[in-house]
Length: 100
Image (tube, rainbow, N blue to C red; front, side, top):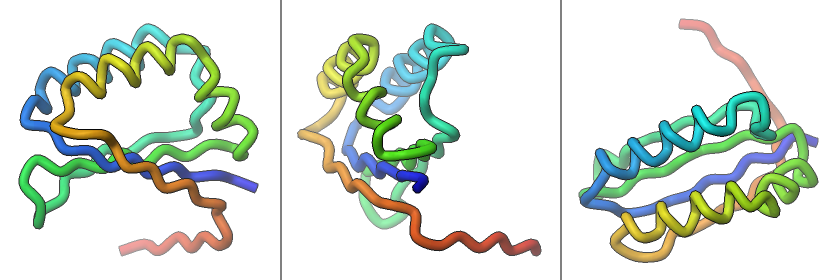
């Protein structure tokens, strides 16, 4: 079963955060366990962002969490945030694709 993790965070240093994220993505090319990732900005909350990360399974997400590269990234990203992140761990139950 596919697994989705939503990470909500607040940062006034989004450019630095994104530079760190871009570096991590490049550094881990060919070794990432996620299927896809979306970064969103909350229109109703100042400096509030959510990353939505999809994995093939909960087990793959846990393997990703256990990687030293992930721990290092998380620590460096936390230093750029204005408080601790909030995690939501979701099993994908249904999926619909709509075209405009």
